[in-house]
Length: 442
Image (cartoon, rainbow, N blue to C red; front, side, top):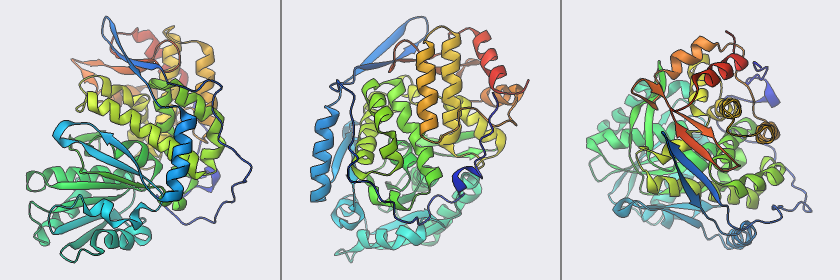
């Protein structure tokens, strides 16, 4: 079941994180659809050793929320999701044109010095607008910027040092604020730099990709890659706020957009069945970049992640379930070389592998396997790893995964009906071996 998916050719994809696209006409008679009985997504995710703990999450009616978002969109008022971490709580602002509302950023700047960390692709598009948002009507604030090369292959110590170099050369003090302007790579590196510089300075996330907006900018995971493993060096460090200007998605290539949808799909699978059903009915609108549908998808994803992070900030238990498909996916990213497959592409293939293993264990039925494959294909994502991956490559890379405990690889697997999962090392090794053999060369 090796993949023929070619990330460099599919849909004429490009390697850059953003590029200007011709405007897309969205038919006016397309309407966002909902499952017949959308009310409260009652779905569970658990941790499994010998017994399984299950959690329930509820949400507002999707139809009601969509109506509210439509009203907010017309009034330019941001939707706000709160990450509840006591005295380190912070807001996630979601909406169109938020970079044109300076107060949203300026209320979170506590000193007079700001360092914007961005990359060569995003800087020409949004750096000037961000600097204006930080300084408009606020002449006491001065802004420096550092522009890094674009791509997962640059998420390393050498590139990180460029951030420290700029901060030290600019003599930034402990009251400064770092601002991450870009996708997940920029957010992770800027956050880690903020956690480390002068032993910790404030930082703000301005994510400009779907992946970053629905996942990586929320929750405080920061870090860099090591040649032997992805995200092996880093820290948990929370931002002052996350500002999601959905207008930035207008310059996002199709490949990057699809990559981010892998994380949106994940939330439905592990804990929010109604959200998954909504995605099944509305994937065409998401691919068409319908602003109301996308704002809802971002909001619901952030609500799911914020709730998990509030319960388990440093991934000692339930937060690990957010990594469905990631253990297999990280092995793909490391094995083929950072940047060859986008994170969401690798996670999509990894999700199919995790679902396959869940079926082999007898924990889910074939119908759920088919639904997962169908929605990933709808989202233009791969459903198997690249042909170059071997069983031995998977095993050697997964052996250093962050979820290994006492020599045992713990995995996130689906268990039961849609919206239920477990984080466990208590599984039949034979099922893992069979999955690896089915999806890669021996």
